[in-house]
Image (tube, rainbow, N blue to C red; front, top):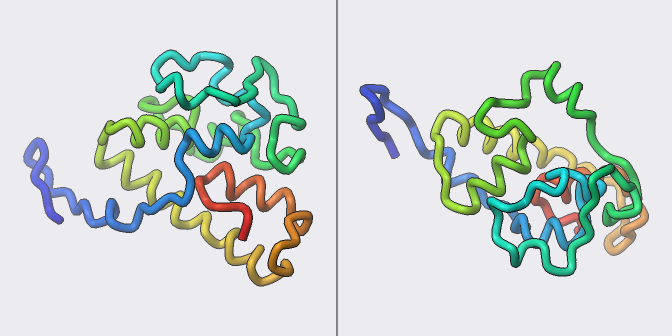
Length: 153
C-alpha cells in the first residue's frame, strides 16, 4: 500500500510481512532479556503482560527461558546504530509499543526488516537440530525467542 504522509510517499507493504509468532506477553512469560529489559519501568504496558512474569532490576540469566545469555550489550546496539530515539531500549520496546497500536512508518519499516532478517537463526536451528531437542543451540533459541519467533521448533 502506498501512503502519502507529510508530502512523502511511503510504501507500507512491509507491514504485511510482519507476522511475529509470539506476543510480548508470551515472550515475557517464557523468559527474555534476563528479566531486566525494562529495568522495572513497565507502567506504559498492560498489567496483564506481567502476571506470572519474573522481572529484575539487574540481568539474571536464570530468568531467561534457556538459562543462557544471548545477544549483544546495549553499548553494542548503540555502536551498530540499532537504537532510535523513539525506542531507546531497542527492538523489544518498539515491538511492545507496536503491539499496543503505535505506528511510526519509517521506524516500523526498519524494525520489521531487522525482525525478518533474524529469521536466518530459525533456519539454522531447523537445519542443525533434531526435532524436539530443545537443548540444541540454546543460545540461538534464546535469541529467536527475544525476536518473537517460536524457539520450540
